[in-house]
Image (cartoon, rainbow, N blue to C red; front, side, top):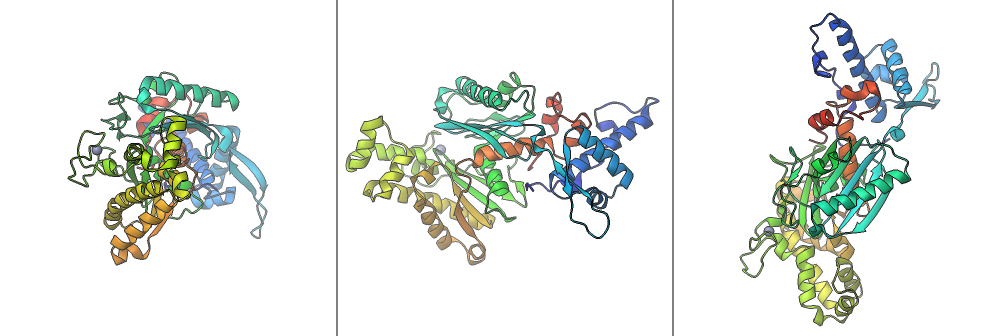
Length: 452
Ligand SMILES: [Zn+2]
């Protein structure tokens, strides 16, 4: 079954009656209302136990939920009627009568997702297990500004929806390459996104879709995606370091994303690493990590020194500018300039990553972002520096590896953010009785707390 980061199923709470939709219980139909609320909580528990894979038959639901057989039967029937659960094969007999298996209908709804980078974006559709079912991609300069970028993403959403015959999305998840205040979903002074300061992608999308919108920093979503859906996944604490146009980190500790007080945790790109006055950063400060090592600073130096490399000068003449992939190709055939630049950049990021590893003691350090297009030697370089700097206890159980989802970690994380917010213990009981969250966007946004 699908696996997700939040311990969900066993914890679906029975809500206080008055909190379900804000109705007062003082009227004469108070008892009936309490009964309805309890039914909603029981229904939510059944759906979550099946969705999470914790239970797949009615007898299992009875023992896992602690509810009576009659209630379980009634609520499972209701979930089947609502289209959220279907019956499958007979389960292997445990001695008595064989029970019918139950499966969550991940295809009952779809979420729209986008991951916006500095020089490209991906858009997609995902099912209710958070699995991506459609993906599209476009090279795009984020400096085009928020209006035209969002309009272009909207075009992709419309095309994807038409192709999948999707009428209304259940939710939308968006990743942005800048600091996102998670409570307001607004960008705050993003260094590599001119014109985006204070912009609300949520506000823009809510004018076009009657669906809840969750927005997060791209690296946070990469960490969620990798931690939850990697073929190499395990339960260990994870530190994700992205080296793309910018540099950032995301942390999963005990299955939860560490966002910090305002959502800026892991924003390591503007950590001061040198007093060299020539290392001027895009944020306006001097000596930031990104000014020394990042996709943009690496390309800046490669462009300035392209004359030293016949391969890079040829690539520049052909297309007018260099991309990280050009450096990767050149390094693969032994180009000295490309090899040098990748090596020094990886080393500088590794120095910072080593400090983070000693501070956080993660089980896994994952390297991702566009720099992987420059070759996996980046990961080897980072691992050797981190291991040399790590204390013995930290190094003992540390794995270092490249991201595994083929540059879709962030889009995958956006899907999980949207889906888990729909099915979190604080939101599910509020819409489940209708069988769909459509029409509850404002409430869902208020209570969605997945991975927090
Ligand atoms: Zn900076």
